[in-house]
Image 1: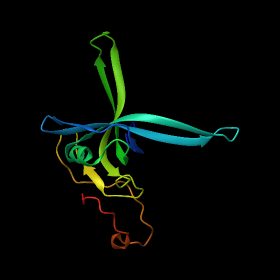
Image 2 (image 1 turned 120 degrees about the horizontal axis):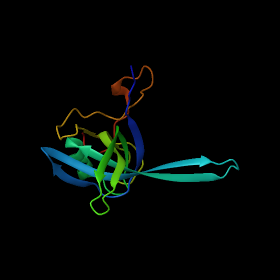
Image 3 (image 1 turned 180 degrees about the horizontal axis):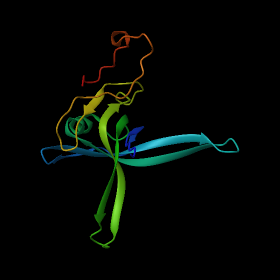
Length: 157
């Protein structure tokens, strides 16, 4: 018996405005995400590394990403990895790229300000809207959902 698990959690800033288009019976949004990492090397010097990730959202999530996210905005993406492979028409060589298919996207800034906002929703590849999951949270023990602070004035979705 083998164990397989494909889950990705990323937080970063959009590198470009989302490209939203119809796909099959639904909608797809494609955007780039820059994820930064900072660490200290052996000598104690701060080092920075940026990883650029292609992200694809489907269905209602794609529509909301296209409506509310723009270049530079921060978001939290929960999804899975997918490998795309194709033959390059110009060179005839096999090409491939790894990308993230988003199950949910949560906005993590509000119009350029720090803070948290409502999730953009969730959807299935193929465009069928699904329940809108939120990003994972870990409320403190004994805290009820009603005891959590209200979100800012972002659209309720």
